[in-house]
Image (cartoon, rainbow, N blue to C red; front, top):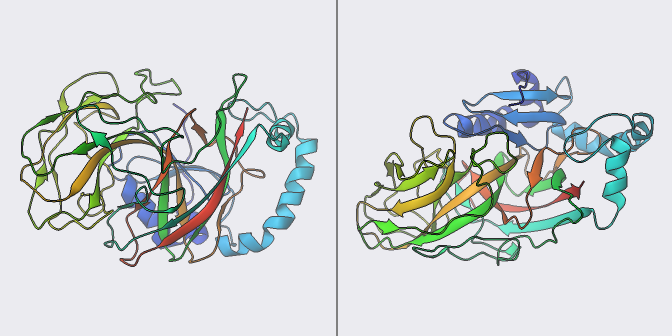
Length: 375
């Protein structure tokens, strides 16, 4: 495991804003998996389990994110000039130098652009909404397939970002992003949606799940496709009835391959609204048994009461946090003059977003672009 030094909290708050830093920190307090990259922060900053931030923070001495946007064009030119001088610099996975990455990025087959626009829906402050079920770009996704088989979503699934896999043994890595939110102090989580299955909420019987994801299934901690960090959440694609209920006697296989482990019981929400995760406030993933750090696959689902509505159990793998501290101001992750390869995007990945711990109940519209380079 790579060790990162702690970042200066005051500088990070100066850059992103105290509210945004607090939101991501709270979202990570009970996190059990590996660190998650934080986009929009020049350097290489990661949010860690327990809510701390570590890595390299190159900003926040005096300037804010707003100052940075004004200065971005000039810095990009300088970065390109430096890349020629510093061509010996070593980078992560697949790129031998800055000039090598720039060369790869300018090759048409190596660079991929993902444009997105999501019309969010009303939510609850400090609750998490799914953006999978709304349009417009990509189109709205559908609920998971029926149990027991479920579905393994890919880049070809309706609702995902379509792309062609790299060839010649190359791997795809997130290198840049520009994100806008119509309301400030909001945060999106980019994740790979590796499995989903519909749950019959009108029944209290246990419901078996036999389908298995095809990505992030290794039990080896050093493997790129290690299952550690895979998380499960309950996604409501229709409003739920006014019935108190718990998600209990739900079981999974953990990151080490140990089967039939019970999730700790999780309280759902009476009258849970559409697109809100059926989780308590502040929660965006189901808790795991003590010592576990990921979900390989599901074994069974169960609800304590008969409820009207539609839900899916979803397994995802986090890619990066996309904080948007200021309304309608582009939150920029500059992958040219800062750090490359913050996260790998696997072949056939089904990329999607969660709107984590909403800062306001008002619907938030999201848009932007993110880019990857293969190498």
